[in-house]
Every structure is written in structure tokens, then in C-alpha cells.
Length: 281
Length: 121
Image 1 (cartoon, each protein chain N blue to C red):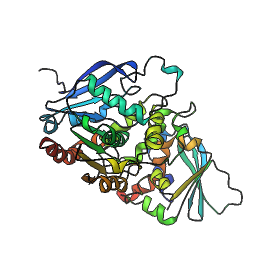
Image 2 (image 1 turned 30 degrees about the vertical axis):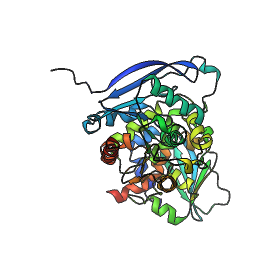
Image 3 (image 1 turned 135 degrees about the horizontal axis):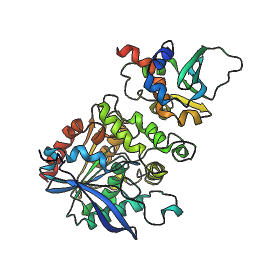
Image 4 (image 1 turned 120 degrees about the vertical axis):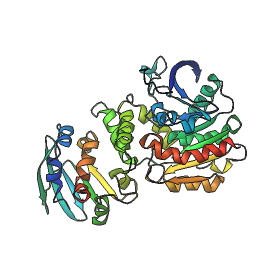
């Protein structure tokens, strides 16, 4: 009997990001239109493994997901011990474009969730010509802080456990137990202060309410998918972006803030019609 | 509404294991009805209904009776599934010394959701 490998390939990419050399962990599966997937705050590219194992997705799309620097198997840049990690809108946009260039992707589709769902709105404003289409999962223009973020990174509280505790309620109560706990496991493995550093973008620096009206979906089509149980990026927040941009939006039943990892089977059912539209652009 | 919480929590060996370092007293305020819940090594040692003259507790969770009732339904309505969902909507206040709560957040979320289980069965 031959080994039961999944069709996913994982490799380390050497590239320069934000002026510094990086060694970035990248996974991919499938072939066709490049679909560059962006993980949530404080997690990593494993969130997309359900998609990469689904032939309905990979038969027409080359699904690529990378661990952002500081996340998953992508280490922080040399000298990280002398700084506090904090993600900004400017760096996040630049990093995505530089990764797409380093991978030599021709007009990829970018799909991001949560912070990734927010950054696709920034990409729509600033880099529309670089992308074939954009998909925002759990995408809203702004989320105000609703707890004291300092709890996420202090030596007298277990960082992995508190980060998982903070996000656990964002998963749909109807999600399969395996998907729920794997999603939380990713959070439990995050490096110290990384989730908090990402939330600097999500809850402070990445506020794009003032620029949503400048998004032109004719320059780059935008699609929005949000889980009904997500109280961080709410259905109302997504529908507001849809109303202001004309982008089609679907509120997904029985899904929360992590659709691709909490319940991939259910999520793919919502994603396939969007991918079909993108194929026919 | 808290009648079953001690029985439910103390019958769950895995939940007790997860909370084995928890040793504190916290308050649940259902409208103006206050209850003190004492936890020792992850087990609920006592559930004491008020009123109190000088209640001594580390942290308190306060919400209206209507909010708690929705939170404790077997499948709560959208927006009522989680403590932080209620906090974000300003339907619940979590106040006091939050260190025991935040450093055992997954444990306390399951303790607080324990009254849901009875209806599930």
C-alpha cells in the first residue's frame, strides 16, 4: 500500500518582504487560476487545508496559502527579539503584493478571512489592477475593540489558551466538534503577542470606513461571504460594505468567523458559486 | 436558573481537569438576583444565592434575566451564543479582578454554559 499523502505541497520560499529577508512557509494544491489565501489574525495557513483537499476547488484553481511572517512555520525576521510585533495596513498590503510577486503569480485572486477579509478591502482601494478578483470572508470596514487587548500578551496568562478562549465564541455553535477544536488549536499555537499584534491592524490601524466608497468593483470584482454567527465581523458590517460598493454578499448559514476551518464542507458550498463566477469573468 | 450548574460541572471530569488550577469565588447577577459561585480545584464547592451585605468575590458577570435566559437556551439565538458576544453588544458586564476569568477563559465559558446541557438531553 502506498503512503496516503494529501495533495498539498508545503515549501519554504525565500523572499524580501518590507525590506528584510524572509523565509516564508507556503502550501499549495491544485492548478489553474491562482487563488492566494490569507489566514486570520493569530493563526496560520493550515486554516485552508479543507479547501486544498477539495477537488471541486482545486480542479480549476491553484490554491496557495502562506504563513505570514511571525505565524505558523514562517519565523519572524532576524532581530525580532528587539521589537514588538504590530501589523499595519501599509505593511500588510505591501507584504501581500511582494509575496504574489515572489511567487510570480499572474493576476491572482486574493481571498482573505477576518484581518484577511479587511485587507482585501484595502487591496480593492489601492491595488485593484494587481488582482483578477477579491473575496472577502468575514469582511467589514471596521471592528471596534470589545475587550482589553493587553490580556492577549502578558506573562501571567497563558497566551495560547487566552487567544483560543477569546475567539472560541466566534465559531458557529453548530460547527462540527473536530473543526471547532482544530481551529482553536491553531490559536493555541500562536507565538507570544502575535494575535495581539495582528489585532492592531484589525481594531485600530485598518479602519477603512472612510475609503469604502472609493472601491470600484468594475476595476476588480469583489465578493463577500460572512458567517451568520460572526459577532466580530457582523452580517451588518458586511452588508454595509456590499451596499456601498455594489459587491455581491452572502450571509452563510451555520457558519461563524472561521468558515474555511470550522466547517470546510459547508463553506465550500458557498464558495463554489463565487469561484464559478470568477472563472467566467 | 443556576440550580443545575454545580451538578453539571461536577459531573464533567474533563471540565474539572481543565479547571484544576482554578480557586476563586465569582458572582453571577441575573438582573438584581445575585449568586456567588465558589470554585475549588475546578469543582463547584458552593452556590450561594443572595442577597448579600458584603459579598466577597473576584469577578462578576451581570446581565438581565432575559439575556441569561436566551444565553442558556440549548441553541441560543444569534448574538447570544457567547459571553463575549453579549459583552460586545453591551448586554453583559464582566467586571472586577478579571485575572482568574481571563487566564481560564475556555474553562469559565464552559462552566457558564453548563446550564444549557440539561435541555439538550
